[in-house]
Length: 445
Image (cartoon, rainbow, N blue to C red):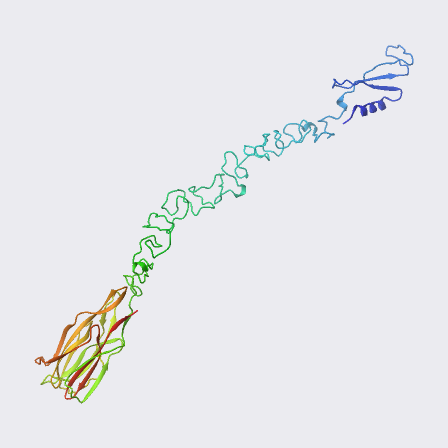
């Protein structure tokens, strides 16, 4: 910027020698500067009049500020930030005051989408002079949130700058589910938590929910009271097992451990023998470990009808699947028959009914065994005290073979709870004595 002092110097140089430039300052005048000049040489006026040497003439040059640096001349002078000449003004990069057009000055310049001249970031024009929009990261008055690039499905702020809330159908970061409603009982609760057994809320389809997964209390992990067959082991309910499949192979339908077979307690009980003690020979017959005594095959003297020869009969013990029952397989001889043998003798069989076992007999005899009347009983399986047990039904008089007219006898009875496992026979002119070995059966698990 040129000061009056520098301007005076410039003008004096321009006027040349012999001219004196006088600057007249008027502090209240801001218009064009005026100058006065004196010339020492004589000059002729245009009318032909002469002037004496030394006369002084006052003149005005007519120079204005048009020759001085001003805003808009296209030159960036001191005190100016810019000067684009004819492109200064509203909407341009340089204002009419030769100042840069900046965001926030209220004048929307090049590169600005808007400029509302304020410092409010939540209105329609942001602080960086862009039009406010969802996704710009600035929460506007009509927006609930704006996380910029983190807006969208599954985010805390959705694509329309609304807060992700339970029930809007968009599963947010803090939601386990969101099915678009806040109705409980449809798998997603009114707080957008997965409805599941064990959450402490009895939802539709649940009979109970005590908030735990303990199967041994009043509400199981299936959210129902414990029942046998639900596949959940609940010992406090008297269950010894619960496989939930109902086949009874491992666990029964009443949740007791299923039995797998039958064996004998080792201690035997010898019963008898009864009959005539004079004999020529004797034999002990044993059934296999999984068998029991069920009767006798014999041959009778065809005239006197006494037992000439005999052999015990054994049958396999069979335990069925549930409902557990003990039955017998096909009987067979326990060995070779003993006693005098004659092809003309009468063959007979004394046999317990199928499914029954020998528990005793009435033996009719004098010198030889004349007749046998079997006593047979069923072996049953029943639950007791949390386990299956074996029991014998009442003994029933079975088949009688031999001299049916003979009525003198002596009983052979296994102790209660035992069955005939083995037999003893002695003989002379015929079978003279019969004895039994009884054992207590028990279940195998």
